[in-house]
Image 1 (cartoon, rainbow, N blue to C red):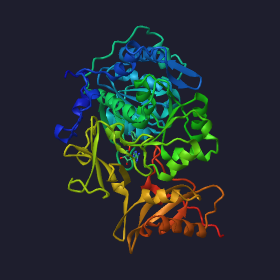
Image 2 (image 1 turned 90 degrees about the vertical axis):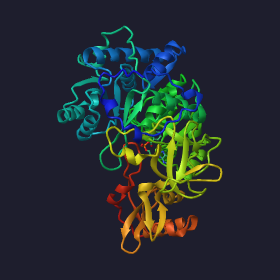
Image 3 (image 1 turned 180 degrees about the vertical axis):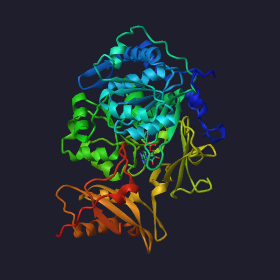
Length: 544
Ligand code: 3UK
């Protein structure tokens, strides 16, 4: 297949073929042509083939862009990139902004022009940006003017980044000002379906970040697996959510999936629970994408959530405790759609729709994917036995120039780093990350299981469980608990929570140590960072 890339960095940085996963394209909808530009398939075709030009596409406070409006902006930005900023196909373009319409327009412009997008989390600092620029060899950047300072500093540290232009800006050097000079359509670059168009950085727990490489066909593949088979959105849906577009959970849920059915998405710059609630209410949102903790926090706001227009609610990013599923159902009447996805696989590969949801289980493999639970030798384990989760599908892990490829991909399978078990009905149940299983007195204990149990107690708002070294037992289970307002951190509360766990799950799993904290350490994508729990500042116990 003829690649359109003139700058061949991405192609040369792919993992060797024998270290890449197997790909499955069995579904009829996964037959891709040799030449494919996903920006054309999702945007130009929306206007020129499907006739959605006048339908709303992107919404934000004070803004509604139709599909035609978005296409107009995208073409103008693509002209600026190629005619003024020197972009050639294959160059990497760093994007930096909170979720907003101009970020989406920039994303499509880069991809339409044959570039490779590298979207970054708004909260990153210069040092972290410089690392991303070096790994991705990003030559260009488009940035929200309000976030430009850290990026300019990063460009000094990583001079490979040579051209920066800012948007959401009215100045004469702004992207908007430059865009005004072009009103002819931009002819899309005719990329190969296996040209890289996106580098997704992993939400890094420890160590150096990894860039995952995704092709034009991967972007289309995820639109054809989980959304039509599990989410089943319609063109009248209004999508909303909290994940940043730099997190592929957000890119799919707030851009690719709505656009693949002619629906619209609300982009919010601030997505803490109060703003998310207001966004859902003010825009009449019908499909919500957010993480388990955000669902709990929305309920805790105390509003009547039944008056909202929501009809489908998606949870991903970390395990959905059964207590959170129940809490949300009782507050809204809606059964949540849980799904496990990964940056390496681009989006969700195990899930269950609202009619098939099972409390405590993630679901079944999404059509297009297969999944197995295996032992250390790669042999399937019996029903009910915990083992390593491995998956295959149309998408899969390709780390850019990184030896960790051979850890994630073995024998053609993607090993996600999760411990799972499968029940007799074929439902997959999350157990723990394989890297934070707690081994105490020879017992394997999954922190998330203890967390799920603690969350069922009325006194607990949030909690995290991790192993801490112990001279006698190797490790002991320790819980860091954020109490509900009005509950005091006392020795009595410690005993009460320990008793609660002992009576609800196997007693050997109870937290031998419990402490109280005012907040838990989380990643930019909202994931609990269990390894950082021991550094939390503990609240002193009150005398009851
Ligand atoms: C964990 C889950 C249990 C699991 C993601 C949806 O989270 C995403 O990608 P990341 O690369 O992390 C992947 C890891 O996160 N995880 C995610 N969802 C669940 N664990 N239940 C879940 N529902 O450890 C996985 O290996 O940040 C999620 C779509 C796109 C994504 N990138």
